Image 1 (tube, rainbow, N blue to C red):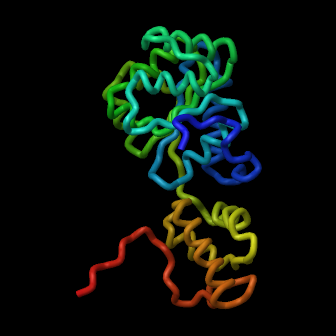
Image 2 (spheres, rainbow, N blue to C red; image 1 turned 90 degrees about the vertical axis):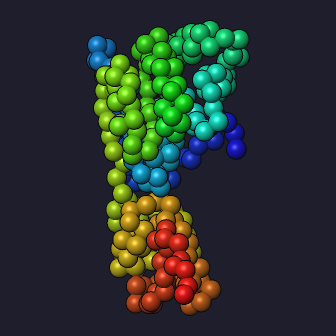
Image 3 (cartoon, rainbow, N blue to C red; image 1 turned 60 degrees about the vertical axis):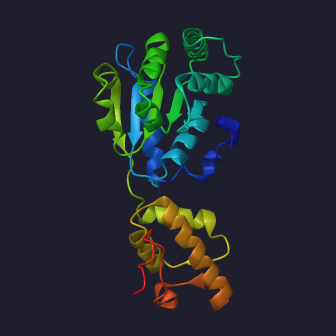
Amino acid sequence: MNQTTNVANLPPSGTTAPLQNVALCTRLLEQAMNRPGHLPGIVAFSGYSGLGKSISAAYAANKHRAHYVECKSTWTRKFLLQAILKEMGVSPANTIPEMVDQICEELVLSSRPLIVDEMDYLVDKKAVNVIMDIFEGSNAAILLIGEETLPTKLRKWERFHNRVLTWELAQPANLDDTKHLANLYCKEVTIADDLLQRIQEASRGTVRRICVNLHRVQQVALSELGQDSITKAEWGKRELYTGEAPARRA
């Protein structure tokens, strides 16, 4: 997997737009981009794993040509800056202060926003101030993506916390989201609304689990039932994936 995610390689915007978290994330970035000049431009989109935050960020990056980096647990401050510059197509300088200046200059000249995914890794490594330095030097719109505890973690850095314009929480997928995911990933089988409702509930609104269950239902319809549609009654008592590991047998 690439260390940075080029906008050109992100999912096409037409495949994700109707999902509610995509709309929330995109509006959040636009709020930072369109804010009055005297207001801070950092916004944060956080929530539990599996709710589609990265997919939402990918859509926002495509729509607004944002520079996008997905942090890794092994990244240092220097590697983060190198990754951002690689995404920008800029050859990194030798020192951290020089690289920060390069990033700030590129953001100012391009007027493009910056999206930092998996921000929790930077918080855990106490690299938060690097992002603040980039914001202070560019006044660019910066969208942070992280887990549900990100707002609490960032309270330890009061100067940074005060520069966040808006906090937004990712929402569990609802029935409309589930229907849209079915349209995207179940091309061969039509799943009835009553079964989609059961999938949404069993998955507890987690996009990843919904996708796993949609695949499972489609395979059952095609392989076991030999038909191109399936209802809740036809699914019967078959299990759906909930994320829970099987209980140990006595």
